[in-house]
Length: 597
Image (cartoon, rainbow, N blue to C red; front, side, top):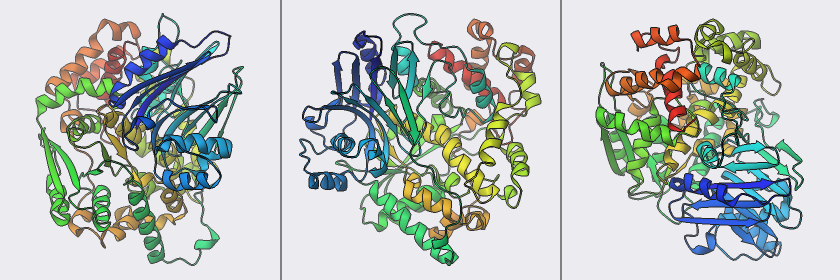
């Protein structure tokens, strides 16, 4: 797990190594264990290393293979790298390290761009061919590892974070930092989700998940999507009973958890006390993991809202004898941590648990470098409340129902909020959802919604949140529920089995074999951070101050009368998902100001 960056030029000028150095400095938290750089005329790479596999200098990056003429920078972890290495050795390749990075280099040389189809893991990787000048970029199937791009005439820069690209700028105008109005519409509609390739800024894009992009030396490029799960029933499963599905999913989840133990250092677990992380702990215990380190975080109650779920995480810790760590955070500490969390965001993110993950990652990183986490289970196994109402609806009805339950604002509210210079024609967010929910490849409306949430909403909300906040402290977070074999199996599973038992029916049935029932049968919880869901005190002051600055007034994103109404009653207009509308506006301004936009 690392931070990467680089530049390539297409106009005959050498790569700007000073700009690459600035990007390397900007991603130092992602890789506290080492720094590396490499350049060859029109191409330059930079890297910060977090040592997890092959802790020696042989695993350092950028990795240059002089024999093959390939140089690579890589962020992530390839869980089957040992099996792939053995296979490549059988094809005659000789290795100089024990790292998964070298497996990527040899794998690309042997398989070409189809090397990604052999990988189990999370990855963003960029490779350069010495003899052709070609550069190849690839991102993992579920977009767990990020890759941001800034293309200007004659050059392309890339980095693990958006702020690193901003830091690369040596003079004004190198990167267009104006607001993308369509991205703003998505941000305000989907609680800050902006699907790839857009970001909130016009001049910075991101490589979509499951995508390979090939860039030739003259700047011409092509890209293709190499993976898309099918949300249709398969003939080979026609005779399966509910128990057959449970057994298959359990085995796939066991494999996913086992894969994510590959490491030259210990692996812990972020334990919220919910079904998903509790299942991970139970499965790891059954794998024989003794003295497993687990970590939970809690906050002070605000306005009658509880701020921790320790009673549930304690049950799991006691049941499986983990080395458990309770982390309790006061309201003042929460407010103080907000600035760091915003600085660590590659894009503005409004989910209230961003700060929780930031604080949790800070504490965990003091004793661990690698953890497993339960993100993704709700999207993959239908755990959210908006899935049951879609059952049995035709696609057009499903679009309207999904929008009512998931969207933060409708078109009328957007018109009242967004100032004229940033207004867009029609409703691009609704059109985007309609296109995805009505596309072929999904048997039902529930299947189509799960496909949308797993492939789009998950990637640019919880997955990005976990990556940004964990890597801000040099902590590698692995997500077994996003193992692509497991996701493919879940996509084929009949939706009624996932909707059963109040949602995540298949997982709950598996859980009853492994973990205490009181954790399974509890009301569904969310990472509680009441100090942000209910704005008051220092956090409210920060929001008010950000929206009142000269920078905010000059930018003029929002109509002042709308902002004033929210400021007069900060908690009076929750979104359908109980988000805070004022927080969305304030967070965006705080992020833009923090990153000098």
